[in-house]
Length: 406
Image (tube, rainbow, N blue to C red; front, side):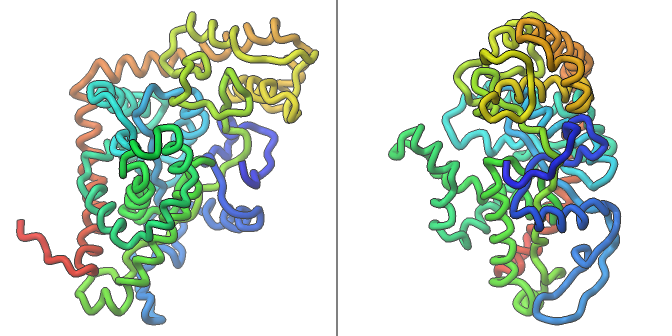
């Protein structure tokens, strides 16, 4: 993780649980942190500004907006939860939050339609089970807001192909899938991600280490669209807003939220890993959790410690324990640092089961009440569509499309 801000307490337990990942150098992070932690304060970024002139018109003050989402591929695992979803719970009280189940992103590789449908609803239910309050945050399914797909096409038409071919994930995934068989969506989905972000005039975007290039693309496309069609050009086209897109900032996290594979302490915990033993899924029953932790890779050293590059599994399992117990590094080491693996694994197992128990109970309540879940997703989609289509309509006008007559 690049240039992490140092903290002694895991992001999942700290009062500063604000996000996941970082971009840019340390000085940029410190500057951005000071700027973004003033969540409710209006700044010059919250004004409508015509890039072609020096005049600014104050906009209605609103809380800074945060947007994030998780793909409904496979099951939601501990890494998704500790690295993203649990942090969202604090964000919904501080920011104007939009949390999506990004199902359109889930079809860039071959998929099973029935499994996608089920995983999409399960993902939304897990958001709520983990503490997202639909009365505070907009919870919705990406494909329920048609503006995402249309905006992705508009942005695709101004995106140089060279920008997309440089994306590391495209290179890696296309190599695995076979270059001749890979779908166009795998190349262009960073543009869809940019559309997701820019549609809501997002101020802040938590983005994973493996996605940081995509946020940079979103920022570049915002600036490119503003240059090509904004300012005086947009004014001549009769646009309500002459700055088409706000340029989003990366969301700055505390350290320690990256959860690694149970089978390889140097690899990120992932839905796409072949072995289910590599991850703890949020809905795993206690006996499965016990088996996975028992079989987790360890080392031959005595004692346990954080931060030793030669002992990535020790750091990973201790971080999991730290996050599910709410303890500091020092308290964790004082309690379990002298244990052998055979002593520590049962302790970690018990803590993990107890932490996930209320989440699983709440999930079962939500998923069994289909009417409630449908209502949450409908209300979330309506609120999201209102914001998204306002941006889309303005961009359509700037790019020369006639107003819709229905």
